[in-house]
Length: 113
Length: 113
Image (cartoon, rainbow over all chains, first blue to last red; front, side, top):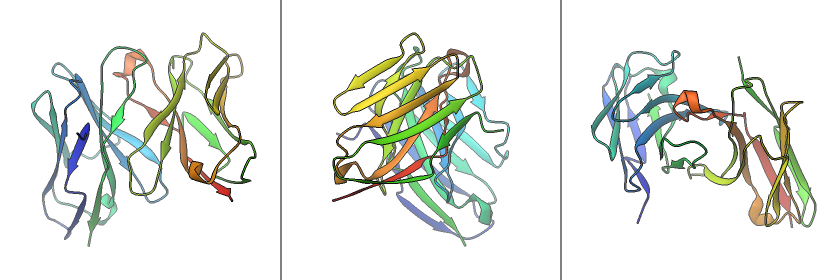
């Protein structure tokens, strides 16, 4: 069983389109995250979310929005896609308690053309 | 401002050798320091982690050394194997940031057979 699963694995789309990436975790975790990995492999937090709190990295454009229908899902919606949004996006989850492991999905490679 | 600095960017080691990757952090509120391993096309996976109340943690061939006063920590891979070839990320988080991980820039490790 996949602990953190993302769909799709690859996404190619044109500039200006709106797209969503789905994420589901079956670990019973209470906190989920979205990270962006750029072409130089640098990983940066975008959002963290549990049922009480959304923390947004201030550098994330407001075209990006997380949507959580329930505790096991955290989808990423992106409006008006730009070339610079091309990257690999990783969903992750963990318990909110200190010093606990974050589990990552396999990533979604987004290419904006 | 990069809060976790990682070096070297790339590392080539002979099979059986010792691989050493170093990280330094700035935020003294960090209280959890994991190392993640990432293979191509996969998400990062936790390798080993340490809290600042201990100076060393060993798991098999992997050891974290932690120097709180210097705000530095390092990963040592003993008896490096070709299967260890991957990208390694140090990271840090604190209780006050909803467990968001701040990653170093990554080290591409190649172990030659």
